[in-house]
Each structure stands twice: as structure tokens, then as C-alpha cells.
Image (cartoon, rainbow, N blue to C red; front, top):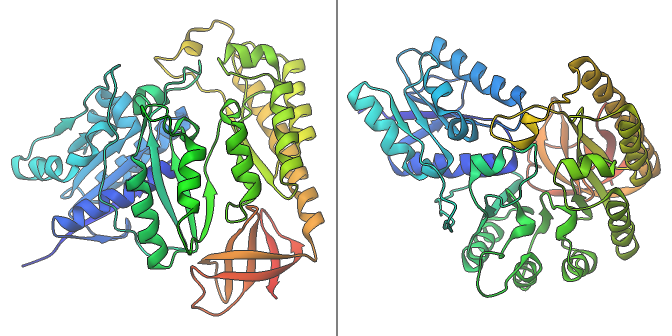
Length: 434
């Protein structure tokens, strides 16, 4: 009997990457083998993102391309874009199944129903305003260098530009014992880095009656023997409790890198965004963390061209970015999302201005990156070998999130290698094993 094959194309964030691993596990349990997206398969799953219009467009392009190339296969579209724009997705020619974020655990059932009936199937359940439970998905990790562990889902924030609460529902946390069990399994498998991820991990535990929070979870995790290094995904500025800062500062196992979204350096814009901090409070938070752990480096998200943003307000953002001296910037041009408050604002910024501000901020970020690199040339960092880049060259991340390339044998994947940095490349640093 011919084995059934499924292939996956994943867009977006670390949460999507984690979920894709879980969805692959569901298909394996149903008797499918997982092949690359470039190979022939019976099922093609496109796990989508909807954070910007660009993400929507990339999702649609991927769907159309695979539907043209493999008209006999079943094409399933899942994830955030499916959740918030199911009617758009189901009208794309060639789509056989549309599955929202709340129904991911039913994906195999829905896909096979579409296959058997020869009819399009749509499963997009709406989230309730009432408490939702965290949905466990079975995850059998593909052997890679680092592993993601999802600890939380959803968001109760109401940032005026953000579609995520509609796409992911209310905040809900994974039970600590489930998190600990998955981390122990990954440790025993030999992973050298584990990333704790979620839609809003700083909100971890707020839906529990016990008073457990992220710092409490970290303390329990850190009691596990033989842990690999831990990395935290994005944390909101207002969620840094004293306990959380102390845990991050005192535990060497936690990587000296934090991603803390700034979004804007102007207080008026931050208020219109419904962010819960001022630019001054953000800077003071960074200064406090640096005092507690001087080697830590920061990355961030910034939105340019938010409705009403003036040139002077944009320049304030540039000033904050320069003062903090981020290692890396993720720059987003504001994109109106239907269903969000900011989409109704009348003072939308011209697209040409958005592009100019984006280019200026990206250039500033590249200068700051180079300044950091210059400080590390000649120094030795511990690098997790993640992927080969051609010939005998490997690429990976140091503890502080610097991307490093270095020569090495073919069997280095997943190993931590001491590397002495030599010179800057384009977006990475060359080094040699030390």
C-alpha cells in the first residue's frame, strides 16, 4: 500500500513553528510520512500568519502556488489568517480545507473529510470572551538544534493596532507539569537550547487561581537537573516583575538576550497604541536589567507610520533606539487590520513616508548592530551550530543572539561550539572554533 505523504509550509512566529511540529505529529500518528514542501505529497498544509498585510499576501501566494503545482493534492490552510479571514481563504482557488487556530487539533480529521467527500471543509470556531483552556497538542520534535516549548496561548491586551487577540483568543496558560514534562523529554533527547514561547508569555499564569506567574514557572524549570540553555521569547515591558528580573539576572542558564517590543519612542503614539508604558519607563527598564546583568543584549519590534505619527515623533523613536542600542530591530510599517481600533483612525500616514521611515530605521539598526559586533571581535562566544551554509561552514546563535558563521565538520548540528569572532559579514559574524 502506498504511504500517504503530507508537506508543510510555515509562515510567521515561533508559536507557528511550534504548532507546525505538533501538526506534523498528528499526521504521523495517522500514518502519514512528512516530506519537504518541494516534494510530491497527498496533503499540503500552509500554516499562516496575519500580523500584517504582507503576511496575508505571502500566505495567499503560497496557497495559489501549491494549488497550481499540485491540483490533485488536498490543500489545507491553517493558522491566524484562516481564523480572522476564513471567507477570503476559502475563496482562493484550490483550497480544500480551512482550519482556524481553535480547531488545529482536528486538522487530520478535517483534511481527510475533504479528501473523502471531494468538498471544501471549513472549521473556524470563534473564541469565547469567557475563559478558554490551553489545548495540548502532541509534539514529536524533528531533530534540530533548538527546540521550542509553547507555554501560553492568546492575549488579553488591546493594543489598538493588533489583530492577535482576534486570531488567538483570550490568554490561557499551559499547566506547569506539562511544561516541565516536555522540557525534561527534550533535555533527555539531547537538545542544547530550549526556547520558551507563546503569544504573550509575560501573561503566563494570570489565568490560574494559584498565583503562579512566569517567574514562578522559571524557578520550577530551573530546578530540573542537567538543563540545556534556556531562551525566552518576546516579553512586554510592563510585565517585568522584580522576581522575573532577578531570575533572569541570576541564572546563567537563561541566555543573556531579551526581546522587548518598543513599538514607538513617542509617548503620544504609545498612548494611541494602547501600550502600557512611556518611553522613559522603557528606557529605565532596560537600564535596570543592564545593571543586574551587564552582558545582556536586547532586540525589539518597532512600528513606523502609525496613524498620526509626525516626523518629530518618528525621530523620538530613533532617539530611543539609539539610546538603548538594540542588537537587532524588527521594523514594521503600520498595516491597518480590520477589526482593530487603529484601522478606524482618520489620520493614516502616506505609504511613501512609511517606506522612508522604515528604511531610515533599518539603516540605524544596521549601524547599531555593527557597533555591537566591533565590541565582540576577538572574543570567544559559545555558539549553537544550527545549519550548514555551504561547504564546511556552519551558522548558529551565540548566547547573546549574535548570528555566527564558522568552519567545522559535517556532524556539528545541535552542538555548542566555542568560537572566536574575527570579522563582520552581512548580518552575521565570521569566527573560527577556539
